[in-house]
Amino acid sequence: MNAVPIPQCMMDLVSADDDRMYQVSLLQALATGDYHGLASMDELKEHGDTGIGTFDRLDGEMIMLDGSVFKASGDGSVQEVREDTSPFACVGRFRCDSSVRISADSFADMTAGLDRSIHDRRNMVHMLRIDAVFDSVEIRSVPGQSEPYKPLAKTLAEQQRVWTHRDICGTAIGIYCPSYLRTVNNSGWHLHFISDDRHIGGHILDLSLSDAECRLCRFRGLEIRLPDNDRFSSLDLSDDMRDDIRKIEGNQ
Image (cartoon, rainbow, N blue to C red; front, side, top):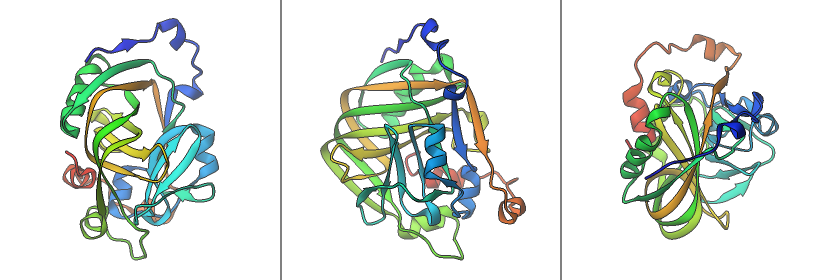
């Protein structure tokens, strides 16, 4: 796969506000069971037009696409969301600064190719967008939770639902975080999917696709909004949570 760069002069036209990813809370906090909504949909839209995340009470998977927010619910349905809050999300203003052609038989195959394509920029945060006919895509979601909240890995093990769809037109939105950010997010690639008809969506566990264009957006900054509440302040986030994060991602 060969990346096609955008000239530096075009990159220089990007404003500082548009050239950073905005993250709500920490994935590690979500992993402990901190599912309380923090950021409104309006707040997310102030900081981006593209992204992924979840909703208050862990109620479904979030896909932000072209400025609209969609929820892939635990029953498999998808609806646009205007009024809700998110305990964890990553959004940004997507502009393509490189692209690469992808053929892959699995999620691992695809991400290995993507790793090679960004090797010289592997310490930067990236967002990707793939509009394609997917040969297959395996996705999951989870229903909203009730207190007391269980850790995310346990919630997913007990309640996630998984679907596989074949020959489906849709969009994958994802983020890449470098390994040094593993204490605030997952290191590597994290993707969500939504179909063109907006009826199917979820967190991507596996996929296959042929000769699809993957557009990449590189961010030069990362802004994190931390929860300002007693629960977050009392969390012990000093433990190494890499094993839990791998279980949560489900595709590593």
